[in-house]
Amino acid sequence: MGRLFGTDGVRGVANADLTAELALGLSVAAAHVLAEAGTFEGHRPTAVVGRDPRASGEFLEAAVVAGLASAGVDVLRVGVLPTPAVAYLTGSLGADLGVMLSASHNAMPDNGIKFFARGGHKLADDLEDRIEAVYEQHRTGEPWDRPTGAGVGRVKDYEQGADEYIAHLLSALPNRLEGLKIVLDEAHGAASRVSPAAFAQAGAEVVTIGATPDGLNINDGCGSTHLEMLRAAVLEHGADLGIAHDGDADRCLAVDHTGAEVDGDQILAVLALAMREAGTLRGDTVVATVMSNLGFKLAMEREGLQLVQTAVGDRYVLEEMKDKGYALGGEQSGHVIVLDHATTGDGTLTGLLLAARVAATGRSLAELAGVMERLPQVLINVKNVDKSRVKTSAELGHAVADAERVLGTTGRVLLRPSGTEPLVRVMVEAADIEQARSVAGQLADVVKSALG
Image (cartoon, rainbow, N blue to C red; front, top):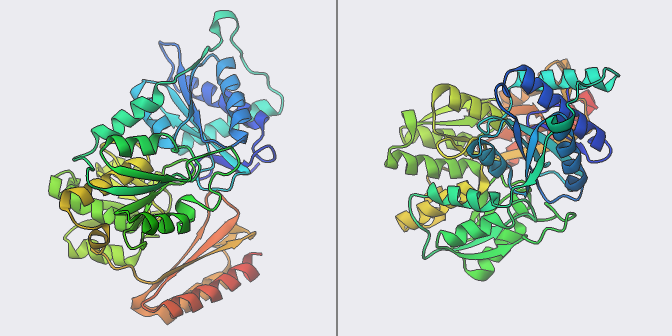
C-alpha cells in the first residue's frame, strides 16, 4: 500500500478512494496510536471534529465520529468550520485530538482527513506512519481491543465553537477596520459564516460573495483558485480591497482596489513590515518555501529582513518556525502562518491582518503590496504522470539543466510533485514572461514524455 498521508492529510475522491470504512478505520487507528504514545494517559480522551460543507463530509463525519467513540474517545462535533478553527478549538478546549474533514481547494468530489495533535498542531510524520501501519494491520484481520459499557466515547455538538473562534480572531487584531469596504469571497466553503461575521465585527463594511454553500458548489468558479468573481465585485462595489478564501479557509489571496491580484508572497511582505514595525517579527525573519517569487526574496533583502526557505508545504514552513522560534511564514498560494495567533495557515486571520494594515497606514493595498515586484512566473500542472520519478528521470534531469543554462542568473526552474494530487508542477521564473512561458512549456512536454 502506498503512503496514505500526503503533505496535508489523507485525500481522495470521496466514496471511491476515501470511503466511510477508511475514515472509520483511520480514526480508530489514530485513537489507538495516540493512546500507545501516552497522549491519553490519566484522563478520558476528547477529540474535536469539524468539516467543510461538502456533501460527502456528512457521511465521513459520521464515520470518523463513530470510529473515535468506538475507541473510547469523547467527541465534540463542531460542524462546518474552517480548518484553522478546528485547530484553534483543539488547543483552546484542551482536546487530545482534532480531526478536520476537507479537501481544501480541491473540487467538490474530493475530500480529506487531517488530524491535529494536542494543542492544535499537525501530527508528526512518524505518528502518521504509525497510524497507517496500525490501520493496515487491523484492516487485514487483527481485531481491535474495544471498550464496552461506560468505556465507549460520548458524542456532543459544540455549537459555541464558531463564536469562540471569531472572538479569538478579533483579539489578534492590532486595530479596527472602520472606513474600509471589503469584498469577501468565501468559496462556498467552511468560512461562509464566520469570516463575514469577523470582518463586520471588526468594523469593516462587508460585501459577501460565494457564501451560500449547498454541499455541491464548494470552490466552483469562486474562491482563492478563481479570483475573477472577486475582482469583478471589488470593481463593481468600489471596494478598498477583496479577500478570497479556499474551501477550508486556511488560505487567503487578495485583490486591490484596481482588481489586481495580491498573492501570498505580497501578503507576507506587507505583514512582515507591519510586524517588524510592531516589534513582533522575531529575528527579523520570514519563513517561506522554494516556490516563493524571486521578487519576494529581493524585497526582503532590500528591507533588511532575512528569508529562510523550506520545502513546499505549510507543514514544513511551520516546522521551521517552531524549531527556530520565528513568528511569520507562509506560501505564495496564500497559506500564511502567524504563529503567535495560529498553529496553521488561517485565511480569515490573514485577511483581517492585511486589512488592518491598510486601515492603520491609510495607504491602499496596491501601494503596500508594491514593496515587492513579482518577476514573471509561469506554473504548469502536468497531470496523470508518475510523480515519484521526478528526481530519478535522466531525461528530465538533462532538460532541467538545459533550461537553467538558458535562464542563467535571471531566472530559475523548479519541478515539484504535488503532495495531494497525481501531478507534477513545473515552475519557471524569468525576467521576460515570454521566455518563462517558452521554457515552462518545453519542460512540461518533457515531463509528459518522460513520466507519462
